[in-house]
Image (cartoon, rainbow, N blue to C red; front, side, top):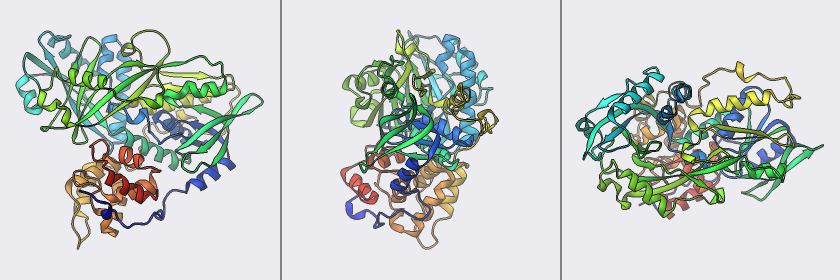
Length: 534
């Protein structure tokens, strides 16, 4: 078991080449006038900041919590075309989603995304027949130009070989298709890094306490550093409200009479230890519109999701006993009981989908982006889906370019002229990176474990070599944080010095996988806090 004594004696001083201090960043934010202030560090705000900085604009990005600290790290971890959208005839939308999915997983971030085969079981008496689903997955793969193979039907016996926990009673056939998977928090952090490399100034744990106005127009924000209590302000020509579930809260700071623009839907997930290897994911139809997923992810099994209207405080969203029971009950349609024991649950999380305001069932609502302009000229944007995060960033930038009066000026590159597939930092073949990490270990010392090498390669890409160098120079940093997880202490130092980690949760929940594995013990947490200097 990891103990406090095993925490590396690596002071709390940032390494050379590390990020500016929070005080330096606050000073920079308060002294400059920015073209664009993005409030909200979820993937929508991050993507917009990235594209805006690429355009040559002076960009600031702030968030009251951590980057991707809410909804953006509480997704189903999928980059997908949206198979269920075919039912509504949204063929163009599926094709566009596939284009973005392939761009991200093949050219933008192949080190952070991996292909995943999906099995869609067809049970006797189920909501869909084998012929319909077979035709559906064929059409789905055709819209992806058959880049993931041809969607087809598979025998129950063959499917059970790949997914031993698949329930085969009354199983008539299995439809097969391909999509991609990611660690959403890592993808978001790499996009923050890309924005900073393009020139953006970013600060997490910085809460907006009020907006600045000049002659009735929003021209910045007043902020409070939640880690130090320091108050400061940012001045900008244009402010973008990208606060997700909190978008209407900020709109009311601009105009107390602003009418609601969105509604929220809660999606809950469970993470479980696996009782056997899974070579494919399950996507099981629950009814005509809903599918429940069982996804092999981070050596665990991810189950979900729910979809119900949420009217509470976005900051208080949590997984309830009702959610847990629903997820396990729905999973039981296609998964054997032994894999669904509550004793196997290591973690649960819930996020909020931001949907256009209006009546109707949230599960049937379109996952579209809502853009509104307020009385003070603040632009608010919310909604969309992870798969199209780059597309949303470009769309918001086009909207900003077309605003009357050109508040951003005209001395910058139009987003339409930017390269279409700019890669995220660390881009590399993860298999090649893992191989190098195993081969290039310190000559006299122990070699890196295979699971650690694979973990680093698929979460940092070529940036893994920076972490390996730290571990080689200080053997204490090469040790595991917990014996049952692949992460090493060098990742904590790296998160502190290069990835804006301020709290133990920043490290354990979003920069590593220790929390989702159920391994964020008191000893581990105390050790991380010690290294962070808290």
